[in-house]
Amino acid sequence: MSKEKQKLKQKIIATLVVLFMLAMVFGSIRVDRINAATQANSNMIQNFVAGGLSLEADASIGFTDLSIGVPNNSIQNLTQVNILDERGSGAGWSVTGLLNDLFNATSDVGGKRNNIRNTSIAWFPGNATLTGLDSSSTDGIAKGSNSFFGSGGLTLVNASPNNGMGNYRFNLTPINIQYDGAANQLPGNYQTWVRLTIS
Image (cartoon, rainbow, N blue to C red; front, side):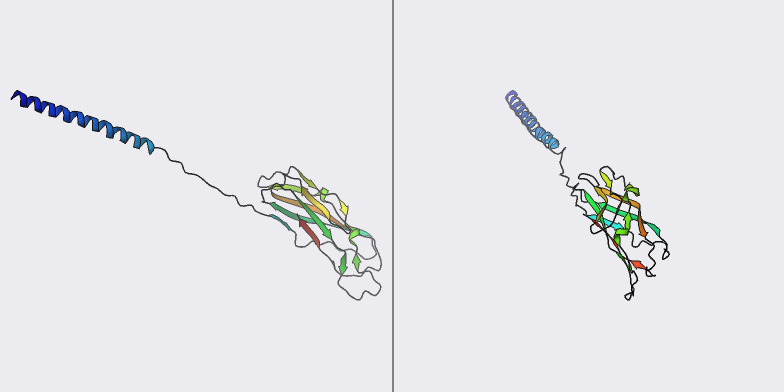
């Protein structure tokens, strides 16, 4: 009877040892799996697509009447020019203006003068107001020189490299038509365009 008890005791101890070892093995595996699952990395990707360089200006500029035979200046403002640089390149930009002669639409002038030469018209970007919108910095942006028009374009405003990135408003650029008072000036409306270009 004592031998059977001893064998039973040994079986119980052996079973306990095996159970203990299994608990140790599977317990440690379980711990490792929990540690492996407590962290995960997700790669975040955000792409920025470059915008463009654009320009908007007044559709028309109307001047006050001049009287034939009376020398005078007719002054009106280029009210608003909007400049938007969303390229993100920092390449800088320049806005230039080109103005042709003003002409009266009448075809039969009969010795009368039907134009106003662009060399009698000046603009004054130095008197205009530059504003950076949406917190855009105005550093490195320069107004053009006050000057009469002629055969080439004139600078209205420009931004040096690494500047002028954002949204800008260039307001109230005076334009002056100098009339010499010629008595043979044909009455009527005279028209042309101011072509603004940004590059």
